[in-house]
Length: 277
Image (cartoon, rainbow, N blue to C red; front, side, top):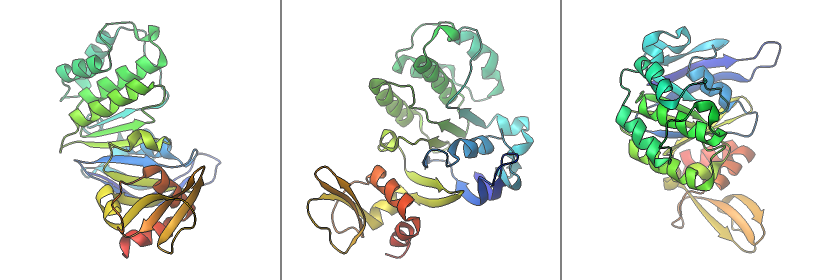
């Protein structure tokens, strides 16, 4: 549904942040977009959302160029940014003013999400804490029912119970006709949610695999002492080493944090281990 074709981008008077990016994002999936701080995750989401125009290349939504910011395109996209300002109005007023821009807006879904977040009142948005504002904006974004929902560091500012509520809500509203792209550097927060991993590093998309493909070709573990020759990545911990094995020699869950560290260290090695098992 979303296609990036040879996308290059640079801020004015700065080196290129991206060069010739190619990526396909499909409905029915929850993508985890990972990268170290400064890798360009926020910039990439803004480009997909039509807020920034690529220097070269094109980003399309169902063959429509998102950079045109056409109403037909914008009504199919919603971005929950990491940093934002909300107007000095009550929650219900914000919904009444903005919901008409999204033909599929579901008021009952909005109310359910707010209730799940324990946001039952109709407060003035400026009277809310940052975490409460974020929960409101997430609830509104989910209720738009746009086919593409982009979320930049959505768990930043949320306490531990709220992070759990966030994961529960996403599981409830994810449908085959929606695509979620969730950017974060807090890998563990998304471990039980995503089904596809995309890693951005040094201006390139260096990793792009489904969780199924990862689980079918890699295994993860913790060892004490020396590691064997099948280990393609190892990182020291207080009690031994977290490791990534080539192949599925042992049953294990995908350890996203260790996987991410392995990709950042040597993306080609990890890619080859999945492609050429």
